[in-house]
Amino acid sequence: MAQKRNYKKETFKSKEDWLNNRGLGGTSASAITGSSPYKNILELFADIMCPDDKEVETSNDSMTYGIRCEPIIRKQYALDFEEKYKVHTPRQHEMYRRKDKPYMTATLDSILTEIATGRKGVHEIKTHDIRNREDEQEWKDHIPQKYYEQVIWYLVVMNDFDFVEVTAKLKFYDYYDPDGKKLLKTETRYYHIERADVLKHVENLEKLVTRFWERNVKQGIIPDFKITF
Image (cartoon, rainbow, N blue to C red; front, side):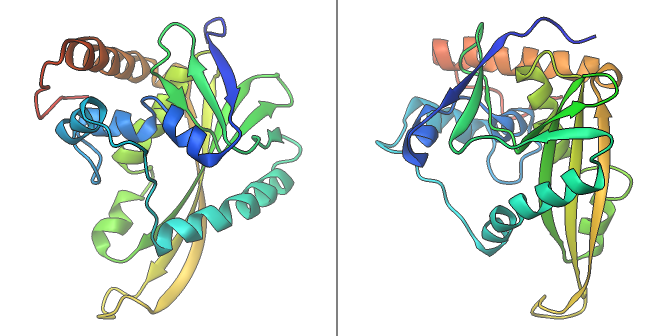
């Protein structure tokens, strides 16, 4: 059973303010555990200890596609599951922060209310290009580890939420096209994660991130490169 609510909602006037007020989020959690392909724990530590004047968010074609798809996927999901969930769209530049550990933050794609029970959940939207057999295998029957730890993180911050629903829109490209441009098909997959089933993972991830902040960031101790989640 989820605990008593221990977080607050914050809304910022601009994307710049939102970027500069973010704490450790889902991508930070995956960097700390070593599953992120984009940043490791040492790079995260360096970014926190020696920050630039302003944080800049980078983008590419895949990220732009994902951003443009998000409201469409959310509306489609709300229609497909209207008898099961109420879908709550977040406000622009909205973020949630743990009260007891304010360095822990989460930006959600949407919030779900289970109609039959009133239980709360996170709705996470992912878009991903499948360009080789390794990509395809990563999404077989489960979400990739780097994304799994991100959604587990939402259960750390949103400590009274009971589940996560992941909607993944996958674009399959021809493995043998040297330019990777021949789109074969698109497919939408759904993944459900119950807090009760991953409670030890939630607790362990919170401990690892808390240790990183309290020991490495606050005391200035360089972290070990590899941490087991």
